Image 1 (tube, one colour):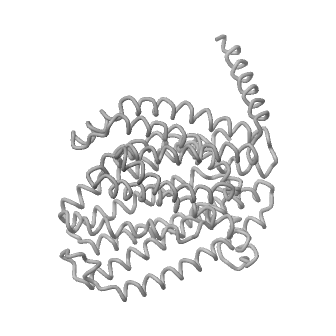
Image 2 (tube, rainbow, N blue to C red):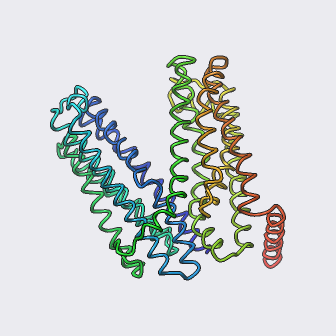
Image 3 (cartoon, rainbow, N blue to C red):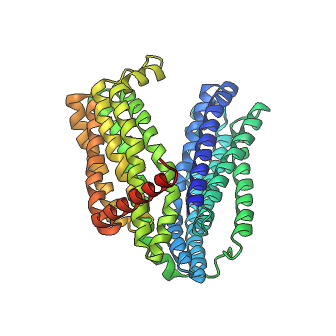
Amino acid sequence: MIRRLLGGVGANIFDKIIVSGSQLTLVPVLAGAWGLKQYGLWVLLTTIPSFLAMGDFGFATAAGTKMTMAESRGERDATIHIFQSAWFAILASSAALALLAAIIVFLLPGYLISGGSAMSPLDAKITLLIMIFYGIAAIQGTIFFAGFRCAGLFAVGAFWNAIIILIESVIVITVVLLGGGVMAAAIGLLSGRVLGLAGQNALLRRRVPWLTLGVDRATRAEIKSLLGPAVAVMLVPIGQACSIQGSAVALGLAAGQAAVPTFTAARTLSRVGLQMCWLLNTALMPEYSAATARGDRRAQAAMVLATILVSAMLVMPYAIGFALLGHWFVKIWTHGVINSPPTLMAVMGLSIIFGGFWYPISNLILAKNRHGSYSVLFMIFSVLSVPIGYLLSLRFGATGAGMSMALLDLMMFVTIVIQSRKILVTPRELFASAGQMKSLLSEKMLSRGI
């Protein structure tokens, strides 16, 4: 298990490097070749796939957990049954999305899409359709990744996801450097995704040959059983989008547009500490699902404890440093353009602490497909955080928006603590695991003469 975890963490780090490197390279290349107006159109068009990525309605995530648990129990036929049912649901939703999107693009005036850029209305419509099909193609990869997860190959799946992004970025950059415009780049992006999916499919068939592709074993009953967990999965990103975008809008209405960058810059910097926790946490999720399926309470307690310890070691120092020095980092980062007040950084530091604990632990609840226990509450809290943020921003400006975010994370921290005691491990099991870990470390230190 340790080797799989280390491989998963390594793959996650590789993914972060590829994504960050691609973004840092694409921005100057595309903006320099096209100009800001054409590049702005590209940015708007590329936001569409992120919305379409929710088009699987959470089926891949819910199915991946269920498949992992079934495979851990040796129920391979059930794993195939779940896989094909989820893929059928994803294909059906993808077809519906494609049809709806095509109708909308056909009816939408082309000049609204081109936004006054050099592209003709017809070219703008075609480009938008290409980006829509790119988003739908990306959805298919989610269920393939679930296949790697259930077979204990999380690292392989995560690594290949990063390779797909690399392929897409190289193709787009090459097309643009050769003089291609927005439409040509969109075609290159779609081609890269299709090529990557073909490789992902071939790799899955080679590494997990027993997981037969197709939909002939899909059933309505299985799709129905996945629907509840899938909807619960969807509520979390919807709640996050509501909180992130809503808080910025509320701040702008309450304190003016000039206050928004002050808050968003601090919020962006605050997410860095949380990203470090997720490197281990996402790799741990399939292992926790497998331990749950085996009924291995000791392993479950050890993984919960490891998650808490990693969060404490990474998040606490970052949060303290952020609260004390964050306003200086923001000023240096933005070359003095943005000056976030120390009070904002202090309340955002609290948000980092609460979020750094509740989100990783909630992922372990997700790994048991029990995320319905908190996802509805998260959605409610996220919606309420917007008007609360507005009221606080009237009095405290950007700091008020930070206070609203910290309050949301505090409410979720309390919720997850309560739910984890019911769903994950009891305090007694957690303390017992801590004692076992301490004894193991003492034995290793003695054996090395320390």
